[in-house]
Length: 450
Image (cartoon, rainbow, N blue to C red; front, top):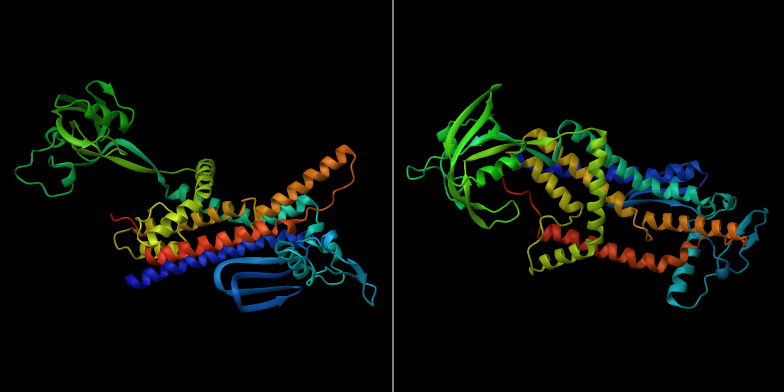
């Protein structure tokens, strides 16, 4: 049963990501067709084609490697006036034909020329007014932004649903309410062990505190939150503690003396310090919220993701070092779809995680991948969608300046000139992707032990 649940988690995650990829590509294809562009292929995956079917002028299909997808929009690259010989000709039927010269010198020049040639081999007579590069700049932005925007909208929909019902596991509100009472005082490094006759009873037991008791005041100080109460207890050493609590809707006072025990200085500093100790654990409630709350959380996620993107190469390098055993893998570091599938499988197969917690984790995992994919694709570098968006915006800016200054129209931005950059970025993406996949196989991340 555990193996079947594990498989169910992996399959659910992978299918969800493939659906997200398909919707991402629809985000490109639908506006491209709506604006009159010609889309010849809509594919999920890369590599050899597993299945395809042509509907109208578009071939829809699945490929063998499910690590992405693409739509082929005709005319992404302009022919380039300097690279063309007899650019415009006409066939025997009088239809305009565009041809690109392939003879060039220099490695990058040849790469650009070859890319133009491959692009224009797909252009058929009658396609002249349907070429992508001839679209107004704002239409290009809409087409290229459509894909990553879909991913972000998917993430928003999932986050809003989970945050509004289950709550946000990353936003926990700790209340000054007793969740549990420790029976005895034990050294912090032995927390969790069974009490013995030699262990002193905690002050909380002596005071008769019970789960559900809400702290109203401590030694006359009204309690507003858990942090305030914790500071008062820690600062009380072994002094008298007069505690006003609310139990079953009624207030009552209990009296005890706190004891002194070695405890970590703070949640982020494990240095042991002798402080006052009562022997209770507070209640922690997951915060819930609606659309406004979700937007606020995603705003913070955007900042965190930008930092993650800026440090991604360094994080991947750390994974590479972990692969060869030079360091431990960072549990907060990046994972590939392989690692995401493993975490999904471990979650669904975990016997001690309640069903609603499993569902929430899977949904948030899928949302997180979608949000990252969307943000990643907005990076303003080719071959990412953001690179095409940046080219379209630059086209709008320089044409606008030309009109204002009364200069000749500078024409379309030639994205082909940035292809050397695109090859470098694509190579880096490929290397980072391979490193993460190998890392998820060799030094995988697992669910934290409960």
